[in-house]
Image 1 (cartoon, rainbow over the protein chains, first blue to last red):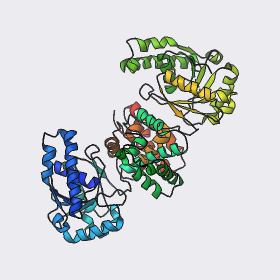
Image 2: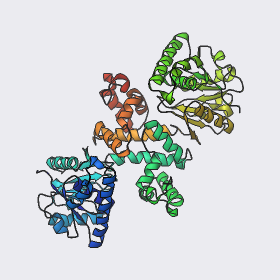
Image 3: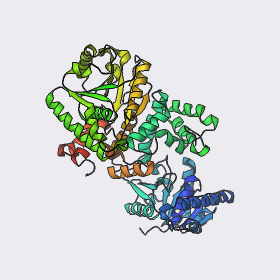
Image 4: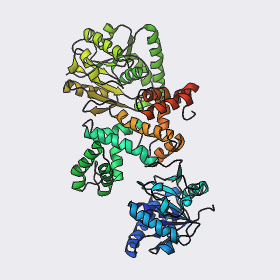
Length: 285
Length: 285
């Protein structure tokens, strides 16, 4: 397994654009693919905004101009065959729809050269749900990024039982070379490590609120003081976004989760309070 | 309900001594009670050590000598009647044994003046488990402190349905006046706020370890980077102490908890690795 040098990212949404930009910023030649030129125009704007953020936050003590220069390492295309023709690694960050993803892998398997490793950034699916559609289960795994990649700079790397260990190691090395802390996951697990820890904490906080034990401010304050964390669970909800929190809660059969989904809808979402992104959620920003 | 000015703490163990010292440091007249003179000698040593810590860590920007001077506000006695004769508030921090605590409240109810408010620091019992033994359920509630009170300066205040709201408010004010951030809990809840949040996180981390998903270092690193917290769950286990973690896990009927208890016993406790206190647990210190 040769070192990974060229990257293609499929999908230029919130996370796809961050994945592509972060790798470009770290010196990789990156191709960003999305479905048409209109979407690619939006992607261009996202990349420019990311360059501004990296510049302003002096990510990795970046020298003046490095964030802007990184844009030169990014090539945008709406032609999938062209996008993957020379890719060592393809990271798939398309919407979380099983059939859509399976279809993407079917096409990818035909278009990409034999050397190309495929990795899904899916948060909600296991790589085992997708591997049979890749045509190369030994060169397929998951690499999962957190939002605001320049701060939460982890990449959770998780294979299936079929993933070639040399491929796994090469992707871990790629994560490190692209400025991220690789989180090596030894066994397939829904939610990876981060969400496996975070979701129970957030559920517990939601339970305390719905049971009338304490208000969000009190719950958050307790967590911050007792653990030294910068944010309590309701501050985390606001960052994640209340629509995402609603989608996860309403998808759960658990009665408490259903009640929390309802609470979010009635008190926040229906009033356009979606969290940090809209300037108000559990808190005002 | 008059303002709380005098405090008696029953029990001078790890937490009882911190509760008493913190109040003395904040200017309260404090009586510390324990069963005999030998235990009180140990208490004296604990108080002296706490004064050293408060001095070294410059708690609340304490002026030179304040930590030492606080020792003068502490009176030690092994005579329960004498201990509570003039107490506005008695905080009970005796071992977590239901019958022992009930017996303490029976005696207290007879010995303390009518004005005295009783508060339990129990982590594992609800105040409702004890209220009928106090002879004054309207003047009884829980005030729960975290270990290392000078850093984790919260006091969770939780009443029963019988607690007089004026008493509740007076205890909240006392907590604030003794340099703590009161956490107002509106409804009885096992685990209060803090442990209701912390236990699910720690259980999830234990599950990831036992399932072979990732090692403690990887799990902790993920949590620290993604949430900005200073410590991951296994670092928290080491601070809490692995014996406590074992006791909690082995008391749970859940198979995962039982397996974790066994893991702790075989790999750590049987080898004297009890966490930070012994210099080694999941990590070396």
